Image 1 (cartoon, helix red, strand yellow):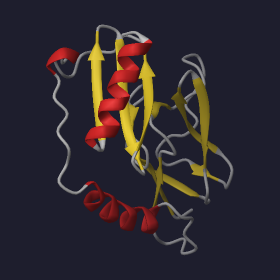
Image 2 (cartoon, one colour):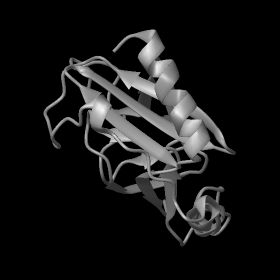
Image 3 (cartoon, helix red, strand yellow):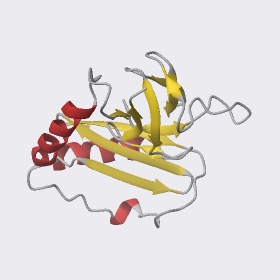
Length: 170
C-alpha cells in the first residue's frame, strides 16, 4: 500500500465519519481510529497470523455508524471508574492501554516478563510495553497492588483504553 492509497483512505474515513477501520493487505496492516472526528492510524508491517480474511481495498465500502458518540459515552463511564488510581486498596483496578499498538510482556524475547499473576507491584513499576509505530512505550503501575489477571497475550494488537491487567490489593 503506497502513501497515496493511505491518504485516500484517510480522506474517505474522515468524510464518512466512521469510528474505526482496519485493512490488511499482504504483510501490511493499517488500523484507522477516529477520535473527535479526526482519523489517526497505526500500521504494522510484521507478518501476523491471519485471524480474518484480507479485504480488498477496491471492494471496501465505508459504513458510517448511526451515532458515533453513543458508544463513546458508555465507554467513558467505564473508563472513569477503572482508569484512575483507586484509593481503596480492597478493590481491583484495571490498567488500560494508553494507545493502539502491540502488547508485549517483556522488553525482549530473552528477558523474563515484567509481571506474572500473583506478583506485587509498586507505583511506577513497568507492567508491559505497547509498541506503536516502531516505538516502545512502557506502561507503568499507577497504583500498588498484586497482579490478579493479565488480559492480553504477548504480541496481541490492543486498542486504546482496552483493559490489559487487573491489579488487586497488596
